[in-house]
Each structure stands twice: as structure tokens, then as C-alpha cells.
Length: 614
Image (cartoon, rainbow, N blue to C red):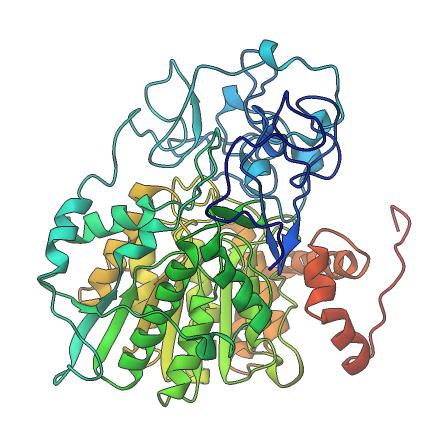
């Protein structure tokens, strides 16, 4: 770790050596000039072992957020490209006809022409690249002073609005207020471990309060969506439903060891996360933060997931719910990103195999593709990874997870991606995909344990996912997966940023783990047109690896008739864009050696970009 990192005992307010006293930006913190004072240029922070560090001396308008409170006129608003689309113009968000943003119609900047894969938190809320090089702007004339941020979904609203325009939450309402009730029950909860369990426990919960200490320390104008109240809200809901502690046991927390982590990540990555404990705050990417407690929180999360998986495989526990953070499915072999530090699901899968499981199924229903989990297991045929996520030809974060990403070498066919082509995807599309893709493949694979990377950001009202899955939909999907491995099921919390949505959805999932039936049946789920095309595309690609899909694909294709061929054009278009440098992060195309595998083992060569219209 280099000296660029800010130690715990460093002083605030030190005048930088380059004479920028009037803005207070350290000369170590930026390469280029400060947008706020004497120039322009987007800042870049020094890195050490993959960690980007910010100094404590900052401009009154930090360069990284210089445009944070800027709006264009009285109705201007933060632009949110890349990550979000909305389902409709109903009560769950207003759909803009052109770029499908779920920002309120009277509070929207059109950004569709500039959407890029891999947008960060700055892009989601405020950053406007078109104004980056404008040196004539006057901050004092364009401040949006009268705004408030929803405590439920973190979305900005004009001061005169009393209910959030995204989730309809009342201004100032505290969603996680019932956490104290849960907290008082922790000491009375039954503990279960390999040494103490003498009889099979139905459902175990993995939780530790120290994970609440992981939070963004830098003061910013907008709250970070991955915040401690996510756990508090779910915990409060479980206590209010009478689930905890009366119906669940608690797993004793422990920090995962370095030896366990290096089975998933490189030693450099593990060390870079560990070094953050010596700093006030640090950033792996501009939206993936750490503070002095984050390394401990990440190790606790991974340790709880590993122990739950081991207990389930060894039949001390029937199933479990890991109420953990930071999330993990974006963390790859050697990089932290997308709010994720260590890959909890990957650690749990290897722990399950160490405990005796030969085959592990990971189903990832987070609205964002789990690029890290896929990268870790893409050549491993003993771990089947199935992901349902928004993709939109690679323009939705993180840009990976196309249907033709099926794994490499021995792992071909063991990465199954179901990439939605638009936002607003709801229960019927998910259930239809489960019935025709997920369950047939899972049944043929016959796993010894099923792990769900349970991001609830595809839930109705989520500010980043902008889809329409209900708590009943999550309940149904959980119920459908219980039969895959004789009920041995581990649910691990990933994303989800609307507190009411994630708490109600998680509670319904835990009810299923406890033996309650799903909220409703969907035997004849009718998908949307876009959902049907996505499923057909996946079936066509995966049927060569999973023969059970052949009759399913033939039946659906016959029902759809000639119009079903539309998905083929979409697939060819996607392949061209992946090979010619289209949307999708560069680190994925080159860093995961995907093109190398294609050249060496498939005989494919990257083609030069074609002229527009070819």
C-alpha cells in the first residue's frame, strides 16, 4: 500500500503545496485542474493495490461532484443514464417515452444519447458529462437548494413535494425504525453451529451488527444507495412478522480467513481490501467505497455465508438466509466494484464443496448481472451459474451477461444468462423464465445445494433496477427452487435499495424457507413479448448444452410462429457489438481473457468495425 492512502491520524484542513488555498484540493488527490476553482478536467484518484483514495482536504464543490447540485432551470434534475429504466407511467414511476428513465417526468434530463455501460453512482444521480468542459458556468446561480432525498429509496425530490415521486414515501419517514426490536432479540436467539446443533434446524439467519459500520464516510450531496439501513429495514420486518427469533436460529459470526478468500480472489485483491482498515475512507471505484470498518464487515459477510453453506450441506440446518453486506456478486477474481468487496456467493459455493457438495447451483436474480461470480466459475463445470438480469445489449450496468456468454473450456454450458432487453420486467416474465429455462436446467444438473444471489433491486419501486417484481413473485421463485436440491437452499442478500421493497420481499422469501407456501401460484404465467423473445434466444443457445431444452424450444417456437425469429437478429447484433468494441466495459472484454479463449480455442478472430449501415 502506498503513501497515497490517508492514515487515520492524518490532519484535516492542511493547505496543499501547490497553492490552491482557495479551494483546498490536495495536489495528491487530483491529476489536472479543479473544476471548481482554476480549471476543468475530471479528477482521477491515486490507486494502491486497486484502491483509489481521496484526501480529506476537498474543494467546497468537490471536483468529483462539482455538478452534484446543478440543474438546468427550475425543472432541471439529476440525469441517470445507464442503470435505470421504468416499467410504466403508473404509481411506481413515470416512464419517459424516449429513454425509459424512471425519473419523474417533470424532473428529467434526457440522457439516452449518452448512455454507457458501467455508469457509476455519480452518473446515476448527478453527473452531466456534457457540462464537464464548460468553464463559464456560475455555481451560485444554478444551485438546487430546495431538494430532499427520500429515506426509503434515496431519490431526490423538490422541496414542495411531500411524497417521493419514485416510491411515494412520505418526506422524512423512517423506514427502519423497528430495528431496535430486532436488536433486543439477538441475545435471546438460539445459536446453531456444527458443534452445537444436535437436531436439524429448519432455518438459520446470518447476521452481525458490525456489518452496519460499513458506510460511506465522505460527505456528499446525495446518499449512497448501499447503506446500513438496508439491513436494519429487513431485520425490522423479520421481527415485526414474528419470524425472528421465535422461528429462526442465529449463526455465530466469524471473519473469513485469508486462506479461504484466496480460493476465490487473488492475494493482491484480498490485501487491498484488508488495507482499508487503516484509512478513514477509500474508493475502489468512484461508487465502491470503504472505511475503517469495511474490511471487517466484508470478512464477516463472507464468513457467515461460508458457515451457512457448510451447515446446510452437513444437514445441521435445512436452509438459511444471509442478511449480510457489503454485497458480493460484482467482485471478481481481482477487482472490487459495484458496491462489492468480496464475492460472498462464490465463497459459500466453495465452502459447500469443502463440506461435501459435489455440484452447486447459483441462481442470481439481482437486476444487475453478477459479472464477478460468472468470471470466478466460468470454467468450472461443478458450479452452474444462472443469472436473470437487465442487459439491453450491454448498455445496462455492468454490461456483461449476454445470452451467448455460456462459459469457457470445461465450463461451457454452465453459465446461463437470461438477459432482459428492457426495464419494467415483472413477475410473469421471471416465472416464465423459471419454468422454461431455470428449472429444466437445474433439474438436469441435480445440485447438492442451491445458492440464491438474492438482489431485490428488480423489485417494484427500486431506484436503480426499475423493474416490477413483487414480494409474491420472489416468494414464488424461492418456492420453485426448493425442490432443486431437496430443500438445501441458501439465500444471500445482494442488492436492493428501496427499503420497503427489500424488507417485504426478503420477509416473504424467509417465510418460504420456514415452510410456508408461496403467496400465489403462477402455473400459466404469460410473459411479455420482450420476455418471450429473451427466453427463446436463451433456449436456442443453451439447447446444445442441455438437451432437455430442445422440446421446450421447439414447442415455444411453434406457438410463436415466424415472428419468433426476431430474436436471432438481436443475437447477431449483440455478437457484432461485442467483437467490434460496442457497449460493454473494456475490463470485461480483455480482463477476463474472453477474446483470448475465443481466438485460441474457438478459432474466432475479432473483426474490424464495419461502416455504419453494413
